[in-house]
Image (cartoon, rainbow, N blue to C red):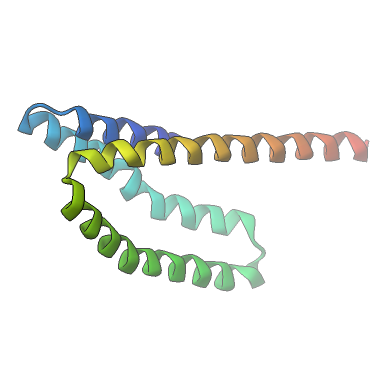
Length: 122
């Protein structure tokens, strides 16, 4: 959730920047969730899967990330050539916000199920 919030802040700062300093600070802000994402994902895989499932989960995660590293730059450059650099930040922000809302909903549903299962056991 924190990663998505920081991403939204960084994307909006890039779009609203009016100086090179604010623009650079926005990219520093965007670097935080991206730099923290991989360690957090590895930690989540370690906690979410059994020892037997971890290699498979890690393989799927790594494959997905590698696919994104190939596809996203191609799509990004194509889009940037069409509309420039600032405008895509405005279009990306609602998508990140939507992902944050969906993540929060899934978290709340999972939390609710965990609370129910604890009360059912007693």
